[in-house]
Image (tube, rainbow, N blue to C red; front, side):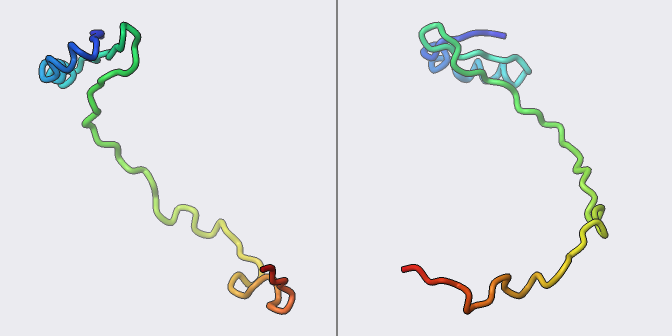
Length: 79
C-alpha cells in the first residue's frame, strides 16, 4: 500500500486513481499521519438470497389489531 500526503495526491490525483483502479490501496496522510484510504470498489455482484414468503405461517395475530386499544372516552387530553 502506498502512502501519500494530501498535496501530492492533489497534484497527481489521476495517477493515484489509476493505481486504485488496478487494485492497489492508497493511504492518504495529513502532516504524515494517516487519515483515509482509497480502495477499489468491488464490482462483483452479490446474489440476493432472500426468499420472499419464507416466514409464512410463523406469525399468529391474537385479538383485534385494527380497533384502538383504549376507548376514546378514556383518553386524557393535555394541552
